[in-house]
Length: 635
Image 1 (cartoon, rainbow, N blue to C red):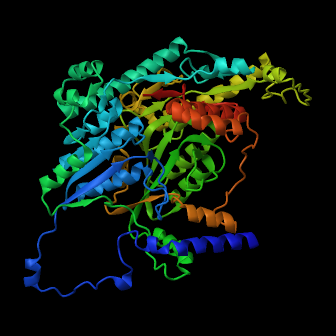
Image 2 (image 1 turned 120 degrees about the horizontal axis):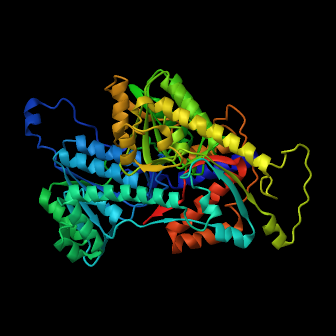
Image 3 (image 1 turned 90 degrees about the horizontal axis):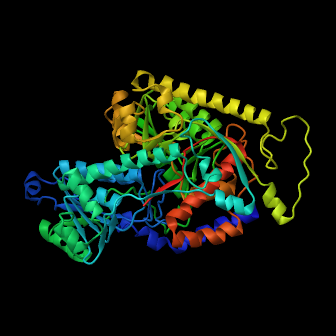
């Protein structure tokens, strides 16, 4: 307790020391220093009040774009992490705001998935349909980013920069050669020729069905990109393909080819916009940002009021609610351990089922939207989330919105919803099951380590890493996988019913589709954004005046810190069965030393290696999983 008290006093001292900066960070004086608003304005005075100056909203697209929102009331993250929902909310507010005449976006390398890219593009199109000009400036861009930014009314780049309009390039990762070098062997089974996730560790390249599936998927993504560019730039698809095949382009050449509207330095670009709207135009760089509560930090006890006041502020709900629940990341059993800025890097079944249970039982919640951005994971955890979603659907409308990817376990948890929305470029389906284990005996032999095993029970060593399965054991695993596969297909049949355009056997077996392809096959209901799904959910619940509430609400750094210090915070309602044993430890000195270097030299591949390690760890823990066929990266 003494240690916690000392830490608390230290935090208070730090906050008090920086209080002047925090107090004025919003650009406003404390309440007692603000001038009183004039009241009882006469009708004559009102007529003489000049109209509000036009507002141009400026958004900076930089840093990382996340699915799950992160609370940052004190600006510690500094705008380097933005949630998709928050960005879309602010763009939508600008669309409805009559004072806002235009929106400016400056692109500085924000990390985007194809589904997220498509959702932002949709928001820009809505702005234009509301007669609001959309100006975009970038230093450079690749093909996918160009497909987003070309939706602007005016697209400009810096002189001498490159427009990397070269198409889509993808890579699948295979690590069998690496495992061979360290003496590790994969022993895997799969349901369906296209459920090829195990090939990453059992082959050095794709099988014929796997390659067929990858090409089918990449064709769908490329066609969507072509369609976006064709629509925005008024070009025939054949012209777009030819332009891509002749790329990349220097800025001037891109302008001459009709791919851009201007070539300007950023300061010149922004100055020209101000000139266009007049000297009295107001440029708002903080438009519709969520603001935390304001405090008088000259009071030394103000720090302690932050949490109670802020908590009360977040709990106030005066309208009907559409709840938003995230399934973001690999699906794992149990409960998360949030990082210092909230959230975790996986979707834990305990957290999500508890959130869905709250949404189902809360009478103010009239409908639920489950946002899924997941490559799948644990079969058991996916079943837990599916069941919790089923219980929500029994009480109120349940709509799924798919993000960049909602495959395998990600589709498993989605298929029972009343309606499924996805983007054209969402990657989904992969209805199939993978099971296996890694044989590490050769690795230990190379290290001079000998393990001697003892067992009681014929199959006690079922997931032992010393040897491959014998035939009776392989039959048992195969039988279990067939059962999981049958349940998966039954969930899809039960959820999609007569919407499926083909027999389930022709859709399953691990096949992967884009959102556009999935719509044609009846695996989803509509092409649409997260906000489209929210509006549809509200309509299904017959509510028009509603608030969007995230369940559970995102926590900030200080809330998490205080909960850890006090031992408070929400506790799991059941026992987590997670094991602390790891085949590969991501926190080991080796990975801590190597991964940052790889991330600097080759960030996409480094992240892919990390995800492969996470998958290997999950397979090691569970044996049978619902996982996407390949680790696939797109440049």
